Length: 134
Image (spheres, rainbow, N blue to C red):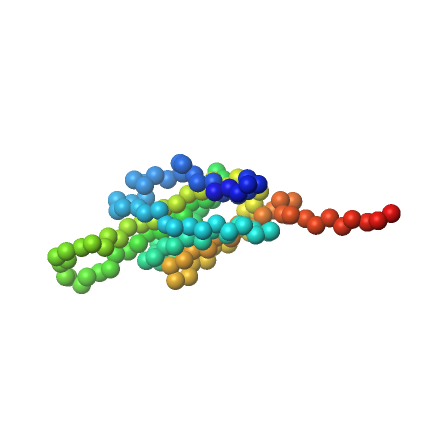
């Protein structure tokens, strides 16, 4: 997922975890938007049904991994007769290709939407250069 300037994130073909290590349930690839600003990148992922306790966001070996565990609804002793809606966990990984301040990464989960803000290092940000006439 790089723009013409080659910034930021690429889809990681392999991560540090495999689906088998994470869960026995199905894992879905959540829809993700990646927005670039002058000072940061923002990754916005739809994770319906994922609670804060079931969310894991990791950065390891330049791979940003998002894993969300969904706890299925308790049917209180009822037995489903027919199902078309299947719950599953979410997994997505991206390889970082830019220079980011790893101490300034911020992740916020609200109403099933995760926002991960990756601040660019100071020397990687665009800089306006003042020109003087002599």
